[in-house]
Image (cartoon, rainbow, N blue to C red; front, top):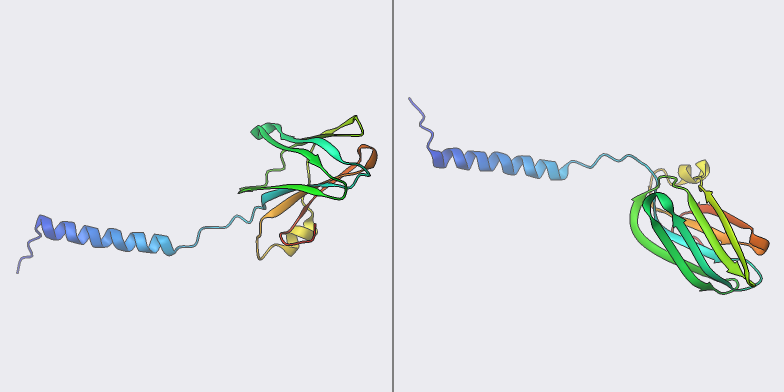
Length: 148
């Protein structure tokens, strides 16, 4: 008994095979590299005066974040598309009471304790920069929904 494969039969079989491959490819989970990601930046004003002309530059990717004014005990924030954290150096500048301050280039390191806390959920981090009196600052990462 001979089986004759017609072009229509061949096309139908090929289409079914491709459909099965496509469906299984959709159900395969993407491999997770567990690299930390960020999607938000917060600049807090912890000085005793309003700060003006806040700029954060990421030279490597030509990134620029600007806040014209941040009132005392306030903050400025910006959310953005989630991206892998690459420890790029930043430069932070601002002015208060007619005095200019510049810090950097610096890198903000991820705390091993924070990475361990977030290991299973793998949530995107928030970069936080605190501007302090007399040109001081602090920079760190935080997880979403923490108190600012």
